[in-house]
Image 1 (tube, rainbow, N blue to C red):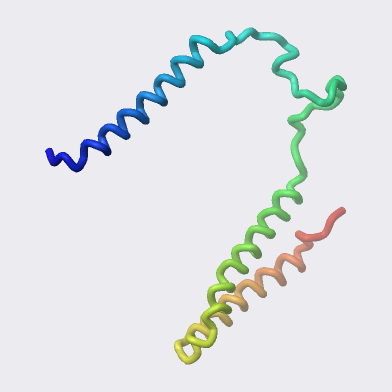
Image 2: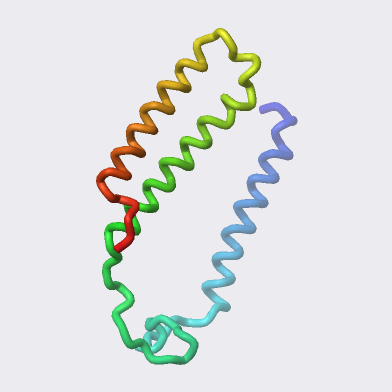
Length: 120
């Protein structure tokens, strides 16, 4: 084994020792877990809980979030094209972006027509 790897092995051993020592010390010196009903209730500024925190959200919130992510990703794909627009002239990239925008435009038209962005 070449001697060049000794510092790497020493570093890996030290990292392993520090990790194991930290876990061992926290288990020996840390507080013991005790169960109580108050410990597992959500803390709301000292006010007793009135409603169930696990009630379901309306689906429109999830749909709106997914649509936001969709159009955010569209921007991520268009920014590199816009940055290198002058070097891509004549390579067919402009036509590809037009097709990409057309598909996204059709998707947006469908979303608007189906009423997915309307709040009730």
